[in-house]
Length: 120
Image 1 (cartoon, helix red, strand yellow):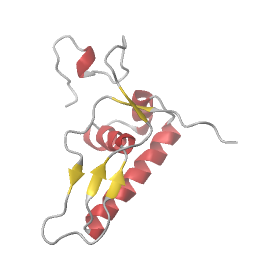
Image 2: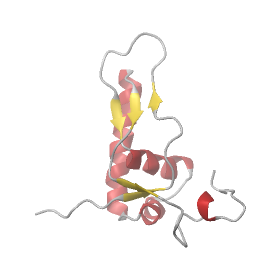
Image 3: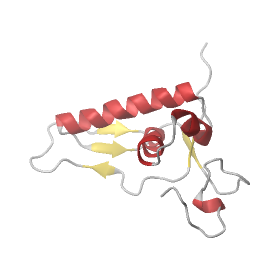
């Protein structure tokens, strides 16, 4: 029997949750990128977190981050190479509610007095 899946902490939802290829109508179903996969891509590729730092931020093991990140990269590559729409939705995540004393992200906007996030 496998262990139950642990919710991954996500600090905020994506501002834009759907991307469509330009030009002709796409000839296939949208690729679904989960919110936790989006968060792993954002943290590792945009914010330059290591997989270990990303795991600590999302409250999961580094090996879990590696699995999430690899899945996300394959989905994004599929959408780009095959010219398919990409939609961000669903997944096993828990949105940060801002009530924690320490978010663990090293600068969560909700937990900083000045409202600035230095990692953005």
